Length: 330
Image (cartoon, rainbow, N blue to C red):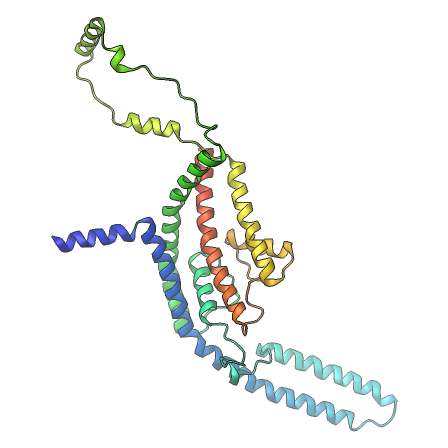
């Protein structure tokens, strides 16, 4: 019996507001470690393979260009040489693009002075958050067999967990915001003026009232006390937040994110606002991602962590606003 009680308490805590939020955070962090472990080694191996294919292309292109330049002697041969050079460079460009090699020194990858990994922990954490929030930037994706298999299982469990957490904390945050809006913003002025109800003690204190009440009770039968009256009164007293305020909260969160990422990434206001809107709306094009320009910098790595935190808070804010909008409309 004691074990059952402990299990019930544990389950009750796990599905509480704090428990669900903690589970989402822990699930995201665990996903970061898992995907880093599965994809980091493969990233270096793929880079080494691409570099090994690139070096012969580079050497053959240089040799062919040198061979052509060493044979022409007259001025009229210059035009022919330029045409041949252009053909070689176009072919070299196409071959390099097919390899997806960017000139990284793969042997130094992960070293203090070498290039950084895409699948570092911050990058893997950002990927994990984009999976469970269904944003899915697509700037990085698992390429190994186990990475893709784990990604399917991770999303299958993580997306319902995230939706459950958002549904749970959305109402709580809506109640908190409504309380702040009532107490602070409205200063109590927007409370509904309720008509004073007659005092039952005074109304039923006369003998005539006793007789009338007894006669009515005999006609109607036993009196049933409705416990839902208090709940209905509470519903009547509940104040709905205007749509303009709710939409202002969403716009303000996007604006704050635009300021933050604009300073971090040196983005113009439109580009930063575009990223924040695409993120909060879960569109997630992936054409603009913070920290993806330079994986070698520790600062850029932490920008990815900041982006992941911004996503989680943004989804919570959006859930709260949806709850407020639903109450206002319905």
